[in-house]
Length: 252
Image (cartoon, rainbow, N blue to C red; front, side):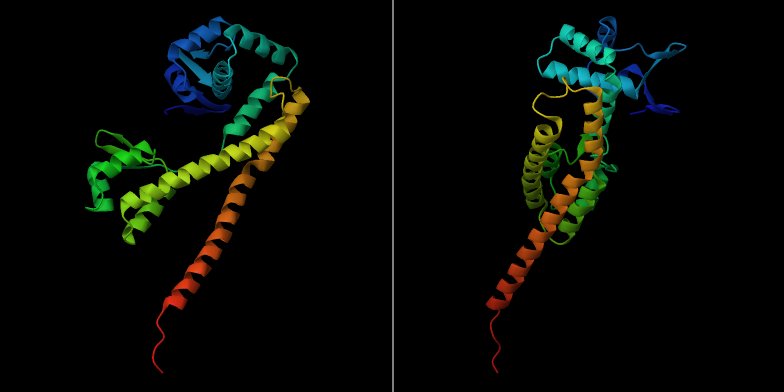
């Protein structure tokens, strides 16, 4: 994205903010006409959208996905604005979605990709990696969204682990990570947000939820990392003991 940083945050052109929010460009004008989205700031012929526009677009899209009509969303936003809760709500959306995925992408070419992974990696591995969203292939350009996952994969390949089996393991880890994320989100939704959802929360309650998100964000990663380290320690200890028991004794 070519959004520009401004003194009060990033700013986006029409196509950029629509792409970031996952909506069609034509919806922006429609939402503005229906009073759901404030007009952009104009500089000459360029319409600039802000982070607040982006978060509101995501909120609108989420409410539409949950079965709200456009009129219903307009009434809901108006009620929040009259009650002073819209700022907290948009701030909560920003707080809940930011900083989870802090990855550094790596871009290379198909030729460099073949050189990195050697002859054992074939086109079918590239297609599968793309399906798992480990890589994006656009023509001759290959982008790895996560430098950490790329480096981990290369380390395993250099130790002799076939790429196909690494992708098998990656698919398994993805499924387990999704299940863990679902569990943490369900706990947060039940015990922090509550059964009524965000729609009925007061401005004070929204502020409490925002603070809770900031406090709890690192907990999920820390718990998973700690438990995985404990499991690996037990598993490696057991494997070493098994190998030692299986070693033939030398003749005295």
